[in-house]
Image (cartoon, rainbow, N blue to C red; front, side, top):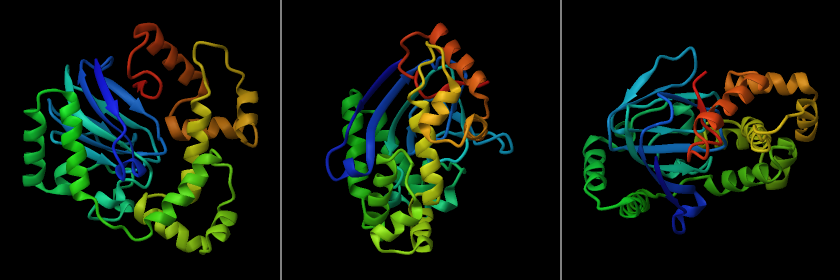
Length: 279
C-alpha cells in the first residue's frame, strides 16, 4: 500500500497535521478507527468506501469522499479491493474555517464532501486530482484548494490556544482553571468548542488522555494495565477499562489481541498503529 504525506505550508500548518495520499489494497476489508483528537477530510478517487459510526448507526457509502469532525466513538471503514484517495489529517479545530455549518451538527455523523463544498466544486477538484501526474502534485493541488477556501472564523484563536494546552497536558488540565486563564466563562468556552470542534473542552480532554495512553502501548510486549492506568491518571483500572470500551468497543485485553493480529499478519504495514481490524 502506497502512503505519501507531508505537512502543509503556513497558515494551513496551524490547522492541519498533514496532507496524505493513499493507494492500494487495504490489509482488511474493514478497519476500525478509534476516536482521536483530530478530524478527517478525504477526497475519494477510487471505488466507493463505507463508514459506520457506531453499532447503532447504519453503514453509509461515500463515493466522492467524506468529512469527519472529531469523533466520540469508533468509526468502521469498509474498503473496496483497492482504494485510492487524497486526504487531510486535521487538528481538532482545523475543519472550522472550511465548514459552512457548526461542527456540532456533524458530530459522529460523517458527511460527503459534496454536502460541504457542493457538487460542482467537488467534481472539479476530483477531476484535477485524478489527472495529476503523481502523489506530490495531488497534495499540492489539495493544499491550494484548502488555501482558497480558508476564511476567518470567530473564536478560532481561543479554541486553538485552549486546545493546545489540553494537548500539551494530555488532557490532565482543569477546564475551569483553563477558562479562568483565558478570561472567559466555562459556558462560553464550551459553546465555542462545540461550534468549531463539535465537542466540549471536557470531551476533548478525555480524548487526548485516551489517545496519549494508547500511543504508549507496545502490543509486542506484555502490558501491565494497572500501572498504565495509574500513569495516565485514571482513578483505577476499572475506570480505565470503562473508558477503553467506550472509545474502542473493545476490552483492553481484546484490543491487544487485535493489534497483535495486525502485527502478525501485516508486519511493518503503513496503517499499523491506530486503525484496527474490525473485530
